[in-house]
Length: 347
Image: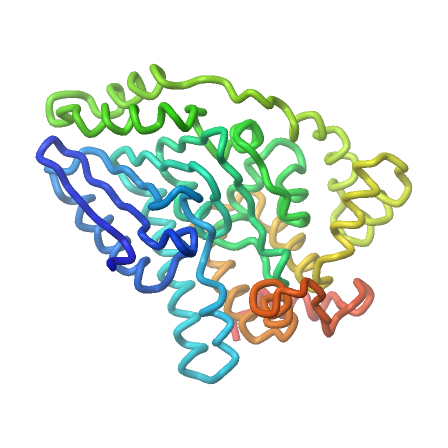
């Protein structure tokens, strides 16, 4: 079975379907390579006017990168090179999506996490539904939010991006729209109708941007559960405006609200190295381009591939699934400024 399906129609519609439904379309190197090549080809192809990006199966668009395969990087030099190649292809593909000159409709229905967010973020028309579960969950496995997260999470209001990065909080449709991670909400039952209309339109005979917006507007609705993350904005800004993890924790400890208690608990369960590296990543990424953030991500990813706490996080959550990682660096005080800085240096 092909891991990615591609199709083009005479009316100018091209489609990319991630086709690994059992793994919720988790991205592998063998998927990224042809996606990247198709984007390069379709950019030049005058017969292609619009691209649809979607996932196969009912569970979601994409659960992220194939982390279990990356876990093998510790086995030897060959596996390490394969892991590094994966990140290089992933980030180059994400950049191509963001630079693509023709409309790309990304169907963010169901689970959209990590690498799935990275692949779709740069699309021109990102659609969420009531089934959307959007997150950057890398903190749960002792990693860091990559795929340009320092670029797009800093686009969120206030310090919400830092909060999402450090807590790995899952957002629903209203939250994704609030942080500028999507462009329209369309009920799941109407998404098929929208795609059918897109696939039946002769895109060679119209202004693609204008026509597509008209079609999307016809199907757009408002999410039922509105404002969950927006209602936390003041609290998030109060606690996550600090530039060290220790100060964030201290601020939360001084607050007796349910939000503060729960958030401190969440942060305490994460890898101290991941927390400190990620906060520095977000702070330094402010105002930088997607390309610049992806360059930093590649350095960070390669360094995390040599870091024992990443493999311990993956083992605990995805391999043995006992959810009890025994990190080498157990306390924030164990993580020096020099250690954090070393993750940002090319080795």
